[in-house]
Length: 107
Image 1 (cartoon, rainbow, N blue to C red):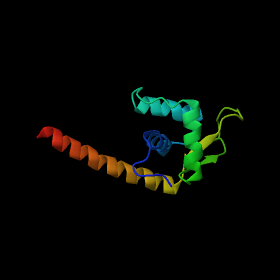
Image 2: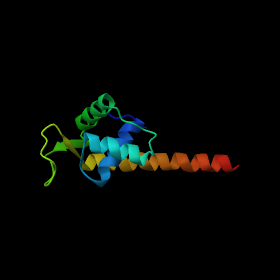
Image 3: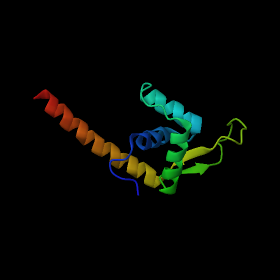
């Protein structure tokens, strides 16, 4: 079971897949873009994380989308309904923490 709070890389992977189905390098690129270069998912970390998240049912592998380059090495992933719900739950919790931190910093 994924602990609360989840590891930052897991949150970022789910967030990357919330917008579109991606392959591993696409996920790496999206996380790097979203975090403004602050989080680089090295291949071992990325693929272990994908395996864990898939095992928990938060994402799953899919066939490449129509028009995708023909490269059998690329594994595509999509966010599942439980994954989307868990992402929303985590984002809500993080939002509360950020609000508390802003309030504390303002005093």
